[in-house]
Structures are given as structure tokens and as C-alpha cells.
Image (cartoon, rainbow, N blue to C red; front, side):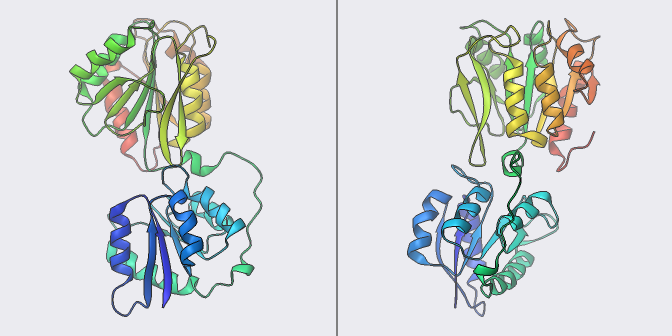
Length: 345
């Protein structure tokens, strides 16, 4: 009997996998499950599974980081099972280079649970025969981790200044409840952003609130940088959070769009859609260019619909923008891009 352990933050996934893998004739028993790597760490030593099934998107520590720790401290055959690892993807290759013996994509519209279970059972039987000492872990040149920029969760990042309060109102009035998580920076003084967020919240199907340090960026929630403080996107495992910090003026502003956008480039990469709205000056242009280089698709408000064509103009001049659109088309385009599995220009 092959002893399997499952590490996945979804209770439903853990339950389905356990049910499918332990059907009569599989010769597999699930000896334990865990919702995240920290919970799994001690169980691994205690339960001594023959094969570990490991997700990538988990809280507190992502699966690839945990995989590398496993292969260094407690090597065993690991199968990565994630929505992020279709065959041949860059992330799947990184998982294999990091010591995984197999990668398998979770069920989707064209790959149902039954197909997945049959494939997974075969892969578990093969993995159980692997000589762990023969696994070659490729030493990678240090670079930005794909696991820090790839996730199934998409976000929108919005920057605005002069005229931005009305521009944001127009956008939020049409956003549906199933919108992705949103982070935004509007140049406003301290004590004004909380009431502005409340105003947007009253007009929108999306929940809008002034950000607090540690808030998670999740679908149908928009977080507004508080006046007088910078806001940055961070990662906690495979989850997005915001960090609200003090600090000097950046691009003559606090909060600064550049601070937000640069952090989005680092931690969200191609999973982000950048939006630059009306505003005076050039705050955000450098950050939006970093976002574009990291793989995001960026939108700028056109000159005709802007109150001040400053910030969008500078972003366009920097080569950071993929689409220049009138205000009334921006929300639709951004949603269209976030719904695509691999956004294209």
C-alpha cells in the first residue's frame, strides 16, 4: 500500500483527492493532509509518506519554496498538483528543476476529476518507485521567483490624481461583484481617503475600503491607499496582501503611485492589469514601466477624457502603456483582460 500525504489549502481539494485516491483497487492510502507547509512540516516527519502531493498556491509559504526545503532536509518523491502547472509551463519546469518528480494540472473545463484521478493514481505509483537519491535538483541562477509572480488570482492596480475622484467613481459604478482584487492610489490628504472609500463603496457592487496594513487583496474588494502613507503589494505564501507604511515623499507624493506600481511589478507581474487615470505630474510612470517589463498589461486614460493629461501622458511617453482608452471603456477592457488566462495585448 502506497502511503500518500496531501498538502493543499483547499479543504474541498483535500477531501476530493482523498476520496478519489483511496477507491478500491488503487493500492493507495492517504495517511494525512495539511492546509499549508507549516502544518505539513511536522506531519511529514511523523507520518513518513511514500509520496507527497503538493499545491503551489497556499498561505504563509508557497509550494515551490516548501518543495526546495523538503528536497534539502527531508527528500521524498513529490508530485506538484496545481492550477499553475499545465504541462510545459515555465512554472512546471521550475518545479521539476526544484526536485518534483511529476507535475499535474488540477481539473478544469476540459479535464475533469475522473481524468485527473486516473492520471494521478498512475503518477503516484510511478513516483513511489523513484530513487530519491537520483533526483537532480538544478541549481538556478538567482532571479525573481516565478512562484512570486504567477498565481491564479489576478489583480487591478489603479493610479490617479487630479480629477481622479470622479474618474474612479465612474469606473466603480460599473464594476461587477465578480471583479478581481483591486489596489489603488489616489493623491489625497490624510483623513480624506476613508470617507472617499466609503463614498465609492456606497456606489459600487465591489467592496471599497481604506487599506489597513496586512489587508488581503481578494476578489470583489478594492483597497485604497490611506492619505499620508504609502501602500505596497506584498505576498504571504501565494496570497496577496498590502503593506501600509510611512516614508518620505516619492515622486513628490505620499501615497505614491510609483511605490504601489513598483511593488505590483515585483509581486504580481503578469497577473496584474495596470490602470493610469487622470492626474497632474509624472507619479506612476516609472512604476508602470516596471509593471510592463514584468508582464502586466497596462491601460491609460486618453487625453480627451482626462481632467489633466499628465500622469497618463508620462506613462505613455515612457512606453509603459498597451491601451489608451476613453474613461468609459477602461473598466470593460480591464475586466476583459483579467478574465483571460494569458492576457494578450
